[in-house]
Image 1 (cartoon, rainbow, N blue to C red):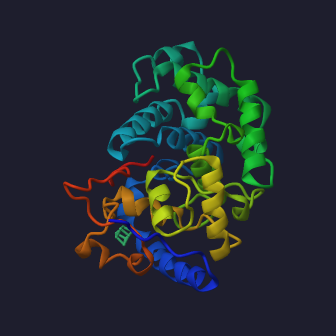
Image 2 (cartoon, rainbow, N blue to C red):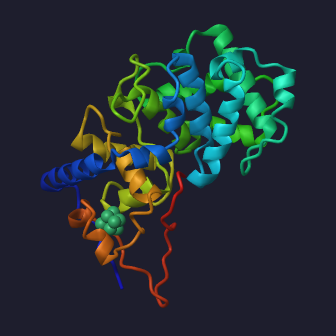
Image 3 (cartoon, helix red, strand yellow):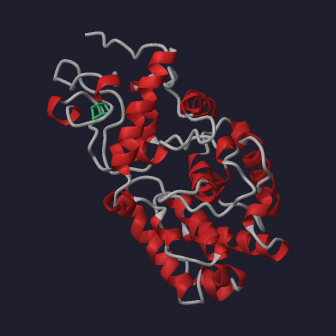
Length: 304
Ligand code: SF4
């Protein structure tokens, strides 16, 4: 059976999207969603540099299952807290601290990756008062690209394979979702995000394209593309910019948590969709059957 795609983004369609996304945005602002979101880790700190270090670490580890990466972030931050907090920990990072990370593993990231990340942040803080100094005002493609160039240059030693995945560059076509999520946290100012860096504008952000946001963007007609690339992230952001030119990634948290919470199953399910504010504008496919199994990624508590 052919599933009709979403209609083109006419003015009327754009107004409908704005109305329904606003409804889902309001519903998503709950303590339960925040308790599942990696932004909860940097939100626990008040010192700006502690927040920066906790945010970098949390964003870079926010891939795979929320219930698996959360304990790894918590463990690393507990180690840092025992040394005066995340900023003090990286500023005083030495061989003894590096040796203590040898057994930290999360999927393809190993202890050596965390050692390199903390040594890199140490170098950054020897040169700048804030990590924000590496991110210039302007479009995210340039701002992030320049920052990644500098971070690659400052990396002490030979980058390990797992570490290299943390320094993906927009020019390589990567969606750079972890850095874009980090930037959303640092730049947007609301009940969820941290709003620490006033020199950057929310209007320049690009959406962090995780599994859930990618899939819902297709259902809502924000993109026809199917690859999770920088180009797709720009296209989705361009569509959202028509809804809110000053803050195009405002709906990211709500879209991501429709999937992370397990609410959206990634296909039509009458009882579930009837309670979803996106129901009138969603072009999700019907539930898979034995003769027509699902092909997209399944819903669940994943952040990437
Ligand atoms: S498939 Fe159903 S639950 Fe998921 S976004 Fe569409 S209407 Fe909402």
